[in-house]
Structure formats: structure tokens, C-alpha cells
Image (tube, rainbow over all chains, first blue to last red; front, side, top):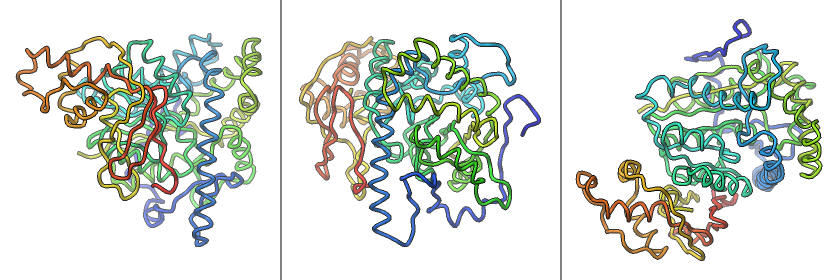
Length: 348
Length: 124
């Protein structure tokens, strides 16, 4: 996939691993080995389940607290989109703050385009109800609701984020179109098949159980509707490779702790999970080159006077998060971390 | 939380059959004005569970909605109805209170207008 510099896309019809995947899909859990969210389903039965239950609650609490603490800081410096910008590869131009914000909007538009939503007007008109899974302070929801004239519901574990998201919606006269609640992406409080567009922009990283996460996305999408997952992944494993190299795993572990990421998986893993649900038009792409300027830019803003003062005021989680950012750059540079998009459509 | 949202929320506790709608137990209700948009409302009519809306509005103190939504063909000219629909769907806010599962009695708190729909580990 290295050949082209434009966002490349692959349409998968079958993959080497798919047949073996089917038999194990129900217990397919991807975990950070050293994290406390150890949730392998073993024959240890009740003890393992109880330990897992406690650690799930602990993870949810950790994620909520992380975003309760850091959202305000992020918004102050970067605005209401809590995701990577999309850049032309190898762009050496030093972007202004507004350039980065434009890149964040471009990320939304490129994702829609890749999934086929913005192919033509007919497709766009079909989008009436959107769920924003892991909505942050609602940047995507507000943008998508405005763009499509649709209703968007956002879910987040952070009450601080939900409140801020609602306040911003009211301020932008979008309160009738968007709303936000505290809920778990792994147990969404919606009935089946409600949403024309299921949007997960950089929230997949936080899900301890990717299979369950995908199950929920598939459950709540309407027949004919689309799922768009944009997420941090680790590199695809080569054929015969069972796991990442120890040094790679070590790098990811260090990032996991501060960002409350319980598990990493690969783009291939997501594709397999979607395939197991008989979905159509499953596509994926590696956009790592298109997000390369992002982390250096975030670090630059953190090192400004305003950035440092805000960091110190925010608290330990923010500071630790900031200190972890160079590891993200290292991960990308060494090809361990990938920025992936995976999209599909539920049959009618 | 407005009733347009309440109309989408269900209680997905394991084993529960009667998941939707959730009963509303209000403690604080506020009215926030929203611009009247007839086109949006006409589009929403088809998507709303009418009984859930009527019952929800009633529990928030608003009893003006008819038991059945009028024919979509007459909606165009029925501004009084659209106004009532608009008010109940978009302008009534549950600021503090609970959403209650009719089957299990489980309460989901609503604080500062935000429902907390997190289920506990043993519920799902």
C-alpha cells in the first residue's frame, strides 16, 4: 500500500484469515498484555469474569476521568474536533492553527467520501439519523447534522464532554438536531437498526472488546446504512505472524497507560470482524501518511506558553498525556502504529 | 433531555422484553425555545413513536398532544398541531430526573439535562 501517496483503498472480498476467524469470532478479544483490563475468556470462569468486570468498570471510569480532565484543555487550543487532521502526504508547509483545523474538517469529509456517503445527492439524502460513537465534545455530530440536515445522537463516557457538547449545540442553534448522553459504546441504549450512519471517529482505540464494539455498531445501523470507523491501529500482521514483536508491544503498552487504551488491533482485524457479519462493501485504507503532521503540531502547541500554562492547570492526566505524544510519533515512524479507516454497508 | 431523544432511548438490560419507552420521572423541567421548522417536523412525524411521545409529554406536564398523529396529508395545513408537536418534541427539557425501565424499575439518572445510560456489568 506504500506505492501511492493518495489515500489508497482496498476492497476486500476475501482474506487469508477469514475461515479461521469465523470459528473463534465470539471469543476474539484484543488486549494490551500488561494492562489491567485483562479479559481473555478462559476456563477460569467466574474469577476471570469478575476480574474482567471490575477492570471494565475501572477502564470506563479511567476514560471518563481522562476526558473530564483534558477536554477543556484540548478545546481551548484545538477547538471542538478531537481527532487527527487529514493532510496531503509529505506536505512540508508549516501550517497555521487554522490550517490544522481545516485539516480536521477535511478528515470528516475524506471519511465520508471514502465510505461512499458523499458519492451523490441521493446517497446523502438517505442520511437522516446519525449516531456518533465516542462523540467527544460533539464536533463531528454538529458538523454532520448540519451537513446532512440530519439528527445526530452522540454518546460518550464523560459527563463533562456531554454537557459541553450540548452547550455548544445550543450556542450554534443546533440543539434540535443534536443531543449527547453518557453511554457505553459497548452497550448502546438504542434499539436495533435505528441509524443511517454509524460514525466512530477515533474512539475504537478505547474499546477493550473489539468484537463486542463491532457487534454494537452493526446492531444499531439500519438496513442500507453505513458504518464508518476511523481509528488508531497497529500494523497488520504478516502471514504466519502470531503477534507483534516484543519491542512493538512494549511501545504500545506505554501509550496505552496514559491514554486509557486497553487494546490495539489491526485494520485487518476490523475487516475480519465486519466480514463475520455479512456486511457489504467492506473497505479499508491506511491513512498514516495523511496524518503525519498531526502529532508534531500537537506537541508544538503544547510547548507554547499558553499550552504549558494550560497543561499545568489541567492536571496530571493531561501532563502524562502530553509526555506520551512523542511515543505516538515514534510509533508512526517505525510503522507500528497505523491510522486506519474501515467502512461498510448493511444490506437492505 | 428533549423528547426527541427520549424517543430513541431503550433499556437494553439482559432479558428485558419491554425495553422501550422508558418512563419519565421528572424533578426539574425547563422550556427552551427552538426555531419552528415545519419541514423538519413533517419529516420527523414518520419516525417518532407517537404513543411514547404523548406519554412522555404527559409525564412532563404537557397534555395538549392528541392521542394519534393526524394524517400526513393534512399536516401541511395543520399549523396548530405542528406547533404542539414542535413544543413537545423539541422545547420541553428534562433537566433533572430519571428515566425508568417499565419492566425492571431500573432508574437512569438525568442530570443537567444529560441522561446517564451506563448499564452495570451484571445487567448486560
